[in-house]
Amino acid sequence: MQDDEYHPGKPRVGPGPLRDFIRSPITGRLEEVPGVGLLTIKIFNENGIFTTFQLIGKYLSFKASDVEPIEHADRFYNWLTSLNTPRGHRAGIVHSIAEKMNVSFPGIYDSTAYGPDFFGQCEDE
Image (cartoon, rainbow, N blue to C red; front, side, top):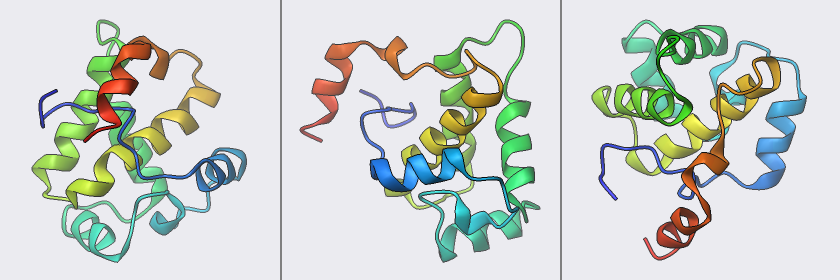
């Protein structure tokens, strides 16, 4: 696996916080996104992202008709990397936003597209 790709088996987001985020209305507060802490908020603010709505907008901006779910997640992950967000939380942010958006836009994200073998590879890292 390469460092510049999103891996759905790596998120440090527990099922409870992810479930709560997916089920709850969006407040706009960046800290509502699992994986987003004070340092990430500071980095987002320095780059013009002040609300969850703007972060979701950024995620959606990487989607095009010819961009499949894996490439879409990679693009968002690479953007987080380019901002130098904390490495250990990038996958959780991608996973959280992607799963939330998949409720409104079914098919925009599909963690099963990575296959069952992929998740086994991530467990040891």
